[in-house]
Amino acid sequence: MITSDNWKERGKFYTISNKQIFVIDEGEYAETIVILHGYPTSSYDYSRVLPELTKHFRVVIHDHLGFGFSDKPDSLTYSLIDQADIALQLWNKMGLKEVSILAHDYGTSVAKEILSRKNHNLIPLKIRRICLCNSSMRLEHLHLRNMGNLLKNKKLGKFIARLTSNSYQKFKKKIKSNSLDPHLNNKYDINNVWDQMNTSQGQKEIHLLSNFINERYTFWHRWTEALKESEIPIKIVWEKNDPIAVKEIAIVMATENQNEKIVWIENDKHYSIIENPKNWMNLVFNFEVKRRF
Amino acid sequence: MDLTLDKNIITAESWKNKGIFIPVFNKEIFTIDVGESEDCLVILHGYLTSSYDYNKVIDELSKKYRVIIPDLIGFGFSDKVFDYYFTSVDQADYILEFCKQLGLRNITFLGHDYGTAIVQEILARKNANVLGLQIKEFIYCNGNLPINHSNFLDTQDSLKSEVSKKIITMLASFGVYKKTMKEIFFDNDNITDEELKQMWLQLEYNHGRKVINFIYNYLRERKIFWNRWSLAIQETTVPIRIIWGKKDPLVDEIIPLNLANKVLANHIHWINNAGHFPMLEKPKEFISAVLNG
Image (cartoon, rainbow over the protein chains, first blue to last red):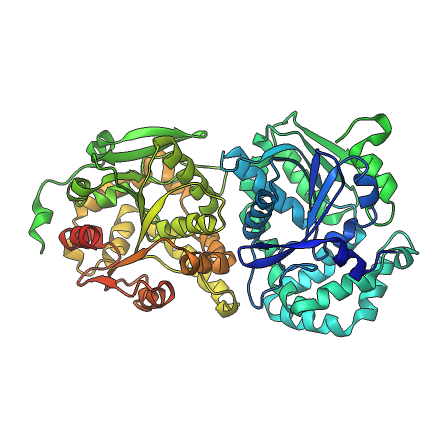
C-alpha cells in the first residue's frame, strides 16, 4: 500500500500565484492525461489506477488548492473558477500544449469551467477529449449526502468541521458502511485521506470549500451550455443509484439538444477507482476493445 | 437645476442609430464606438441601465479616447436571454472576445455599478496570467464590493430576497420605475421624466423586463467571489482610479474609502451633489474626472 508520505515523495511542488501546488507527473508517453480530483479528497485517490494509466499515458494529477498536499491558506474561499485558473496556469507552466482531461465530482465542475473558456476562445490549450465521472467513488456519495449538506449549513458548518476532527472513528465507520466492499478499509487507507485533511488547517478550510454547491446552481446554465456546445468529444460515466448525479443527469438530458460528441456510459456495476481499479479502467478507457476514451 | 438638461434629449431611437451591432459568439452586442484615439476607453454600464447612461459625456470623452460602450448581454439593445442565467463570468467572457474582435489595445476599463464586478472578474484572470489583454487602467465608479463570506450572516439572506423583491416591484410599471430611479439621484430634478422614459424603453426592448431580474443570483455571485474579486483588485498591477458620486443612496461612502485603502489608489475623485449616476447628474464634473485623473 502506498502511504501518504510515499505519495508526497513521488510528487513535486509548483508555485502558482504564490501558492504551492502538489503535482504527480508520471509516465513516459507524449499523450498526456490531466486529472482533476473530487471532493474532499486528493490526487491520492488515483494511487491505485496510476500504474495502469502510466502504461498508456503521461499522467499529471494535482491537488486542488485547499486539498491534499497543496497549500491551504487560512480563511480564504476558493471558487471553482479559481480552481480552473490554477489548473490552467499549472498546465501552462508545465509546458503542456495538448491534453485529455479526466475529472471526478468536484473536478467535473472545474473541467466544465475550462470547457466554457475553451468554447469561448479564451485558452490556447488543445483539449483532445474530456471524461467526466460523476461518481464512481462511494466516498463522494457519503460526503455530498451527509458532510456536504452539513458543511453547507452556515451555522453548523464550522462546528461540524471541527467536530469531525475528533470523530475519526465515526468517519471510518461511515465510509465502511457506505461502501459496497466491506474490505474497503483494508484496501484504501482512510488514515491517509484523513492525514491529508488534517494538515495546514484542512478541517477549517473544508467548510469554506464546500461553498461549491452554491456555485453549481449559479453556473448551472454556463456549464450545461458548455457541454451542449462542445466540439471536443466528451464521455460521461454515471451511476444510476447515485442520488445526486441522477437528478443532474435527468435535468441535463431533458434540456439538452443531443450533442453527438457526448457519450454516456452507465457504470452499472459500480466500479470505482479505489475498489475496482482495473474494471474501472476498462470501463472508462475501453482498453478491452482497444479503443481509448 | 442644471441647465444642460434642458437641451435636446437624445431619444432611445436616435441612440440606437448611433451604434452598431457586433456579433460575439451567438449574440448581438449593441455597441457605441466613437473617437479616433489609440487609447481605448471601454465602459461597462450598471445593472438595469445601458450605454445610454453616457449620452451626455460621450462627445467630450471621445476627444481624448476611442470610447467603446457595449450594452451588456440582457440589457439595452443587446440580445436578451430568456432561459439562461447569464453570470458575470459569462459577461466577462463575452467582453474579452468582444475586445479581441475589435482589436482593442491600451484599454482603460471604466466600470459602473454591476460593470465593476465584470472588470473585477477580468482582473482576476489577468492576475492569474490566463489573459492576453493589455489593460492600462481601471476606473471604478459607484459600484459595490464583493460580499465578505464571513460577514454574510443568515439574516442577510432575507435581505437578498428583499432587494430582489424591490427590483421586481420597481419594474412593475414606468411610474414606479421613475420614482425609484429618481430616489437614487442626489437631486431628482437632475433627471427628467423624458430621459427616464427613454431608459425605460430600452429596458422594455425585446421583452427585457421579463428577464432582467437576476439580482438574487448576482448577490450570490458577489458572495461566492468575495475572495477572488477582492484579491483581484488588491493584487493587480493595473492602476485603479476611483470616481465617486458622493451622495449615493445605493452604495455607502465607506466602500470607496475601503477600496482606496486596499488598492493604494488613495486618491478618490469625489463628485459632490451627485448620487448613483454621476455621469447623468453631473456630466461636466464626470468628464473632467475621467479626462484629468
